[in-house]
Length: 189
Image (tube, rainbow, N blue to C red; front, top):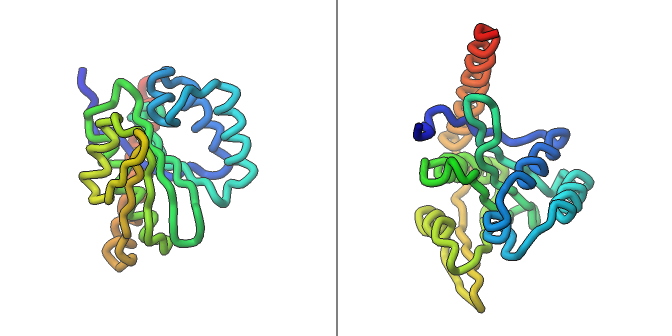
């Protein structure tokens, strides 16, 4: 059965939840991890990465997309380069690819970034990673290629009353959806 993006909610993990990102990444296939990191990545290396993220949680945020069972089906790692610039890394679960999850996450994270004064977003990917190249083109990131790697950048407009409202509405809708899903699960017990 195809997955519906209407069942997907997005939210930023709290610092105390960053291990969920680690467990999610460790469940990905070797091919998916190679496309994401640009090289093979062991489970120990993922643990070391998340250890660093936990230790420096003020510089690392993780957006998650969760299905109706509150399982993570996609992530965007937001690495703060400085007060006004971030680097993004997107991963979508194999079963949820080509369903609009990356679009839903990008809409959320770009609004989140704007509302925090970020004015430049960068993504790095392999030149043959067609799904991510599709995403960066869709969002107007300027692409520069060098030695099989692609760097994509976009300048973000300043936050305004609409971006602030959009983020607040998304947070409230996600809380409501998660409460409804929790209630439905309780009724099934």
